[in-house]
Length: 518
Image 1 (cartoon, one colour):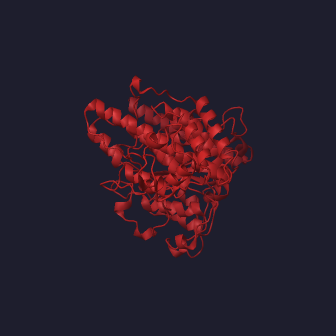
Image 2: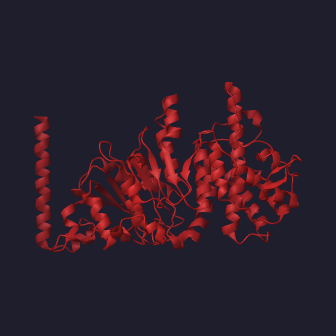
């Protein structure tokens, strides 16, 4: 985590109110530029500008710390390409000269010398080992285009962003307001492709119960803006006790993949701000590799993800999967990838995955994939059924959390029906999910008993075969048999049998207690 600079730095943390005002002013300026087409252009523009300001603030912090500790400091971005060199002065380079400096492969730089343009320089950066901060910068700007055509308006936007100070870990909380604004717009624009960014309380819950340990590798193959990875990093950081631990956390723990340039850039910002020196995020489609080419060296300990669902992949991507496992449903392709990427025995990997309700009951190819999940050395031990409105107002699709590992095959599946808070009929934008809502589920997780919210199902009860032993269906869409509504529709014989079964269980527990006491 970046540390707060000493007082003589002169910069104060940007408050949420100031940040919102700056962002609004910058967008108002951008609306005047004819090269931009709505927020889908303005948002990436604002993000790359903020990224360079943010990165230079982080570099100045690192430089201060190096001076205090007597260590050598080697800047990631050198002059005159640092924010402080070309952007920080309000009366700095502007107009056509600014556009040329940003866009062209070669231009007159702010220091008056002809050389590489800004983007050309940033795209030329390379680290000595191929996996450092310079490589992060290069990869980020390989996917960035400056669409502003008016250099005077661009200067005005830069001057506004220069008022944001990323100078301490406190900025993480301030930035959350910015992220929420950006994510709302990204959800609105991405909804048709099934990309709905995961509420942080759900991310926190999934990380908590998966419980990553230092020395384990964590992957999100569809990481969006990096929410799962940032939360996993925070979780692992609490376990760091030595310099060696710190190295493991920095370079051998956190991995991701995100194919879209804007969320990719936001993921880099998010993870860098949390303290990850050089986030290892693959900017390509995680589904682009043939499934059978993924071997043991490519496998990881933990996968935490909310893959896109409802979208369709091109034919070339489908050909990476076995012929009888090819489907247009992106979620099912990602599920196969996740299964393949988990480590095998003797150190079996584990996964927590968000899936739409359709995944639970879908037949055909989906049934064959789910059969493998249940019978082929995988243990689908828990399904958490989420309430309505988790992704409101962007979709009403009901979702579930799948938790599985490679200790299988599955013998029984536990279900937990996550309730809405008292008094709510749905989550909404104004009344979203909170981490505290998972308190009962967290308490139940390591001490499982059947109750009005939890039940278990034998794997034989969800696998249906035809006379030739071919799989017909794998229905994981099992409703809560202990709910008040379900009890109202059960026959007297079923109710009596249920009561007797529970009484037998109580007697067995009492006998166990007597044995312990005795």
